[in-house]
Image (cartoon, rainbow, N blue to C red; front, side, top):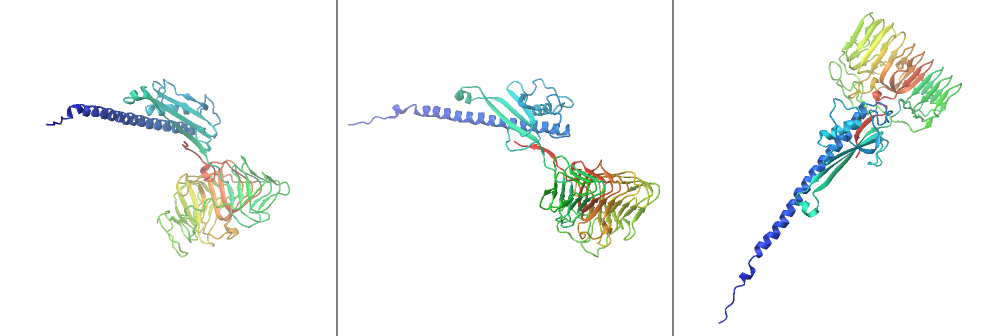
Length: 489
């Protein structure tokens, strides 16, 4: 009788062997996940510290240096240049105020848990020009922070044969300067003498001119006058020019296509008819609203239609924003202070000094907006014995950069009555732009704005009789270049 013997005794121990191999692989995978997860988390911490250090250093540089590229960029100055990456001090102590931008960067890294000591490393490189780590990015100044850390291995130490792994992150921040637009725009599309300078006038602009007229003598500079674009900027001209009798145009005008109105999309506080290009925001004045109709009745905060508010007592006045129906006339006063806000002159002019002497006019954060119909609108006139004018535009909001703003819905070149004028030896200190998109302005008889930050976007402009105009290139006008900071890598 044949008896089959059981094979089970020969298979004993296979389950234990299988479990041992499975556990080894499982623990290996767990070790891989733990170690890689920890390394990833520490690498993200490195990146956060590097970005914070680079951005913090650049922000410190911007707040402590007013010209770009930095004029004092040495290893001993507030804004440090060190093209070769240099380690942060190992004994860095938090001061009340950092003394250099590199110190500020190192402190930001330290605040995020990284110091140049032990198993951590923090290096900073900074210089003018384009950063090597971000090819193609143009900066006036950059700072690159590199942060590393030795991360201990656990399970992977057996496989890798070492106890540590290195994680690192690099970040670059920079000061980015956008190019300036032009400071003087003349929008008339066809007139001769669109920009007219005569009788010893000196007109200078730190960020150039743009003259849209196609006329044969769109730019006229005669009688010993000079029109000069400074700081390597240009005079852009659609049409032709003349510079007879000692006139000087510097540099030579560049033939260009017409420029786009840089304020074409600005909000309009109040207007008699709709202008498609300009957003309509009727939110100024006591009533806070108005309508797009030629027969609309507007609430007057001051004055009345055809009867301007007149300030003519030898005293000091303080005026508030609102709708000034009929305009505003100032003469024979000690001084007028304009509180911040938008002043709307509906159907009348802003006349300062035409009816007598004015000791001082001041206002910070103000915009003067003139509107009305083609027959009632009046421009701005500043003349005859105004001793001191200091006005600055808002620095934020829809009126930012605009110190005087003409309603763009008015017909172009409506009449000489609407021409604005600065005359009679006035030396206005203005910080902001004069925006007259369909009307002209004249500067004459010794008028000077040499200490102002003035931009102009006007239909036509005439300078005569020793007038002097200069823009300093700051961005209070919303026409100059801007300097910002940001991450570039």
